Amino acid sequence: MKYNCFLIFGSPGSGKGTQGKILGTIPGFFHVACGDVFRALDMRSELGQLFLKYSSEGHLVPDDVTVRLWEQHIENMVILGRFKPEIDHLVLDGIPRNLTQAKLLNSKINVRRVFHLSCPDRSKLVERLKKRALKENRLDDANEKVIAERLITYDKETKPVLEYYGKDLVITIDATNYPYQVLRDILLNMNTD
Image 1: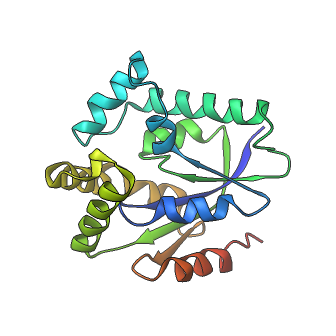
Image 2: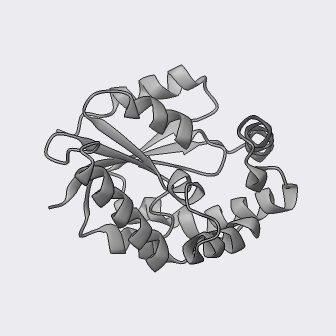
């Protein structure tokens, strides 16, 4: 069974998590943030140590590990009854992060729309990430060198995924607007008919 899903897409600090969390509170949607799945790992485990090594350097976790962890998490949510694939749409943020992941997930997900949260002003992204680091105690967002590396990685590895899904599925939304305006723009473009 392929899961129906919407992808929330954008660079670090663009508001993917904020929008995903809000959508996840609406009946019929189930939000999964890949970063949250990783951060919930036991950092003493082998997978936790691997995640820590890559994220602290601003690099992406290997694709096979990422997709395997994602699949395991989704299966657990189905077993627990939190995600009901026959009636819920997945709202994904943070996955897929590159073309390899997109292709690996192709047999698992039916992408209905890709919402690209665009924020061309890099200084706003850096500012948002630093605020988030303080607010949510996310050390990976506090270091400017790590932030710069994450933004370079996004441009080089993640942004090409937009082309993979194509213009018919991708909706670009101005992420510099207030969160409620971004949410409105997402909801207005949910119709996939």
